Image (cartoon, rainbow, N blue to C red; front, side, top):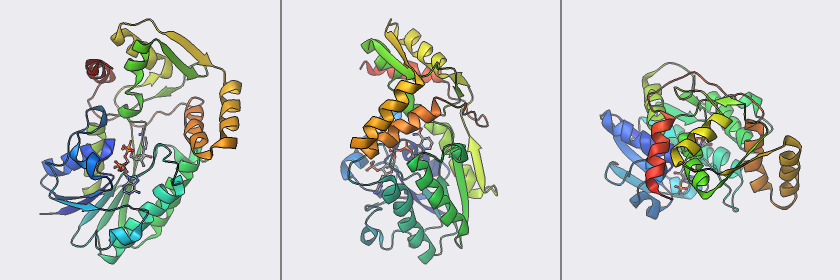
Length: 292
Ligand SMILES: NC(=O)c1ccc[n+]([C@@H]2O[C@H](COP(=O)([O-])OP(=O)(O)OC[C@H]3O[C@@H](n4cnc5c(N)ncnc54)[C@H](OP(=O)(O)O)[C@@H]3O)[C@@H](O)[C@H]2O)c1
């Protein structure tokens, strides 16, 4: 039986990936930073993993001494380990780049066969964003290393728009620009299938998004319809949003980086090859059932 290490196992995507590996008969070792999160169910309907994994290694990828031997006996490493919100302690280079480098070091020492890593779709169009730079710096190192690899390049995840229905209910929604840029967000379960397929596949890079394409405006309209609410809608002009990002950056570069992601995405179409079966309408209906 093949053995896989899942790094990022307590995150939105990592949980679905753990589940998918188990469904396909892999033995799963999870790298976990926070024991509390390990015991809890995941965000946005991502599965609990404490009853799925075969082994747990508690460690912090930014502290290499906690990773010693983490890849011993492992055939495949999968990593969706990353920092999608600032923690005010680490930079994205500490986590997305160096944290994954520390795992790669362990994988090389243990002669792991393949390393599957999650970066972002169309990274080359977003190299103004530090977290994208950090992801891609790791991608270059991984592809130059003496190990087979696959890079998954997904569109935005459903988890990123999970708040839409709640925001519509709370009566206030805003976005940047006119909201006509298009994207095809993807459900964690659909993306997990692609990630696990990549273990046996021969593609070096896999671009993927969900089965439906929406403008930002259409996603807001769908959330409003499902919430049955009539929120105040506030489109922010680009000049205002860009100015805000620059001003925030003076005081807190970490928050600036997250805001820069949002403003960059609001200016370009991000449509990747369509995959999967999970519909946004069904996901928003589920979000409504949370009642928050
Ligand atoms: N969200 C999106 O729309 C999107 C789109 C394209 C690409 N991506 C990329 O896909 C990856 C996964 O995204 P996600 O939404 O699943 O993120 P997530 O829910 O925040 O999961 C990130 C995972 O990384 C773990 N982690 C972070 N720092 C760590 C450290 N120092 N040591 C050990 N574990 C650490 C987290 O552990 P804790 O649970 O302890 O925090 C969590 O398990 C990220 O790299 C992200 O940039 C995301």
